[in-house]
Amino acid sequence: MRADARRNRDRILEAARDVVAERGKDAPMELIARRAGVGVGTLYRRFPDRGGLLAALAEQYVHELMDALDRTAADEPDAWAAVRAFVLYSVEQGRGAIAAALAGTSAPEARQALVRRVDDLVRQAQAEGAMRADAGTDDIMELLSVFACHPGVVPQRFLPLMLDGLDRR
Image 1 (spheres, helix red, strand yellow):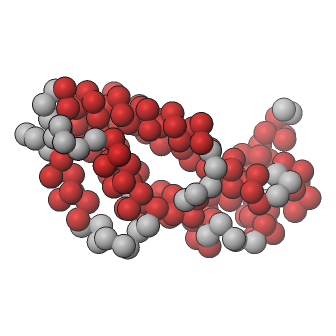
Image 2: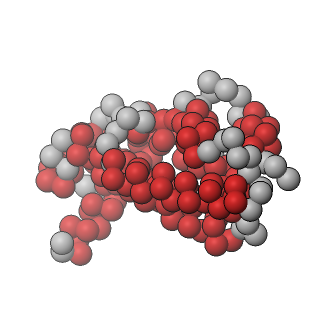
């Protein structure tokens, strides 16, 4: 891909991320193009339809979460601290808005890779005796879904309490 085409694609995805977080996945494509500083034709050359744009945005978002998971695993003193830090990072307000907007959008391979990485960390936390053995990756993913994809259903202040309930220390 040419450098200018790559820059346009990156600007479109960045603008789409902001606009979708603000207005939802039905946000006007024209607004996304305007925010990206490109013409509508450029947007549609890169992404022929809304579904393609949302799929690219969802994949980018999941890869950002995987990078965050890798960072927390490297930065935290143990696996449970990394799981906890990752969950808290993932549900921060800006990321939660984009997660909510993209809920149900495709990026299945990337999502499966993320779940496998979370599962590895959860199993390590359990093996270290830091996380309850009767809870697992599905529970962590459900917390992410409730607090990131469906903000406001449960008050945000309950997330640390729920995470504390998974801690065995």
